Image (cartoon, rainbow, N blue to C red; front, top):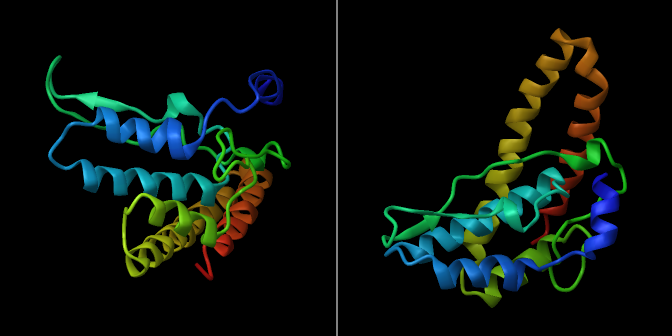
Length: 170
């Protein structure tokens, strides 16, 4: 079903315009710059965990009041789709491609929007990689306790390792 949806919709959007630019247009909080950086972190995380289902409806804003400030919505619907669909790609494009981006491409994305310095971007990459490693330990333990999850858990860890490696040399 997931692949059929993607074929029909032809990747309807990009991280550059449909996610980041639209967020910056609609988010009217005094912290829009910090929230834009949070959105970038979420994009990096989705790429690292290989979440091919991170489509437009998985990024949102929350309003304080009907006419109040709009803020970045908390992250939701985070899944390692490549653990189930090995050849899955991104639902949205980055630099015109649905291939998983390299660290260099993510840095270019952040620099093009003046989101953070090179040092800060590298720290984001390191924090995401560290979080995957830490969470990976819990995944391993969970798989040991629940043999029915072992195969999927192993595939998730494989994909996370590839994703974390892609964040190196940024």
